[in-house]
Length: 86
Image (cartoon, rainbow, N blue to C red; front, top):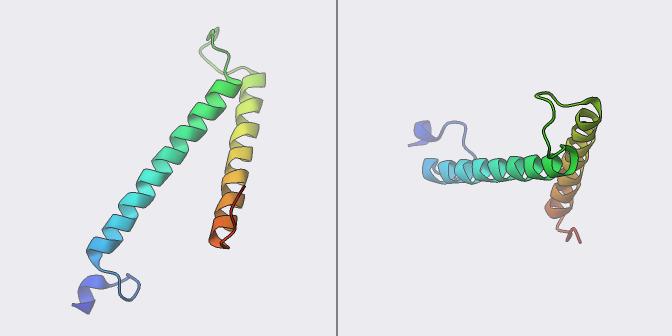
């Protein structure tokens, strides 16, 4: 039985690990979609004049994504420490 759970923490079955991995992937997809929507709505001109991002849009997206990840990291640290983010 132990050979089937190689690489898993003690007391975690394959089914539990699969469930945790599935939940983590769903969280990551949701996080990415929120980041995409937030930064797109904030930074991209709605008229789509060009096929490529202009310099201002590109800089805005860079800053937006950077700030989004930074805040997400801070909130994650606060939640891990048992603090409420707001």
